[in-house]
Amino acid sequence: MRALLGQAARWRFGLPWYVVALVLTVALDLIALLGSPAAALGTVQAQLVLPFAPLGEEFGWRGYALPRLQRFMGALPASLVLGVIWACWHLPYFAYPSIHPLPFGIGFPLFVVVITCESVLATWIYNSTGGSLLATILFHKGIHLGDPIPVESTVTSAIAQAVVFVVAVVVVVALAGPSRLAGRRSHVLPASRPELRTASG
Amino acid sequence: MASRADPTPVHPPQSAIWLLAFFVVLYVATAAAWLPILRSGNSLLAATGPLALVSLLITVMPSLVAIVLSA
Image 1 (cartoon, each protein chain N blue to C red):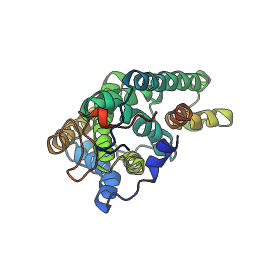
Image 2 (image 1 turned 120 degrees about the vertical axis):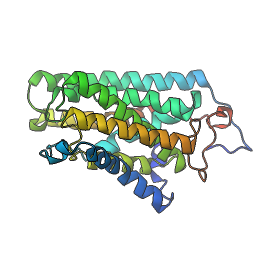
Image 3 (image 1 turned 90 degrees about the vertical axis):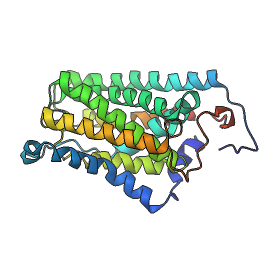
C-alpha cells in the first residue's frame, strides 16, 4: 500500500508537466468547439463536477491497474485496454441525461473513444513524470475542469471532440513511442523489459 | 522501483490475478452501489441522505478497491 500511496507524493516533475496535466483536455475541448460553433452558442450544461473524482479514481486506474497492465503489454495497448474498462465503469451515468445528454447509441461510443484517448494521454503523463499519481490526479482534475464546456451538447460537437482527441493521441504516440509512451527525459523502464520491473504487489 | 543493476523477477500469473481481482471487485462493488440509486429513480444530482453517501462512495470506488487490495 505504501508503494501505491507513495506515487502521489512524486511532485518533482517540472512545471511544464503541471501545465500539460491541468490544461491539455480543456484545450482539446475548446479546439473541438471551434469546429462546431452551434454548440458554443448553446447553454453551458450544468454537469456534475465531482471534486472527489480525481482522487477517488486515480489510485485505482493509474496507481494500481496501469503499472500491472504495462507489465504484460506495451504502454499503448495497456492504455487502450484500461481506457475501455474506465469508460465502461462510467456506464450508469448514462442513465442521467443531465450528465450525458446525447442518445445512448451515439453518446456512449463517442464517450468510449474520448475516454480511451484520455487514458492514453494519462499514461503518457504518468510515464513521463516517473510514475507520478499527482500528475494524473491533476490531469483528471483538468478533465473535470472541461466539463462545463458543452462539447457533448450536440452530435456534431461530440464527434468533433472525439476527432480532436484521436488526433492528439496520434501525435503523442508518434512523439513518445507506443511501447513506452514517455518523454525523452523520463526514467521509466521500457515496457518491453518487464523482467527489470519490481515484483512488488 | 528496481534498478537495472538489481533486476527482480516478477510473477506474471500472480500479478495478473491481482489485476483481474481489481477489475472484478471494482465492477461488482460499483454495480452493488449503483442499484439503490438507480432503483430510487431520483436524479443523481438530487440524491440526499444515504443515497448521497452511496454516490460519493461510487466516486471513490476505484481508489478504495486499489487500496484494499494492496493492503
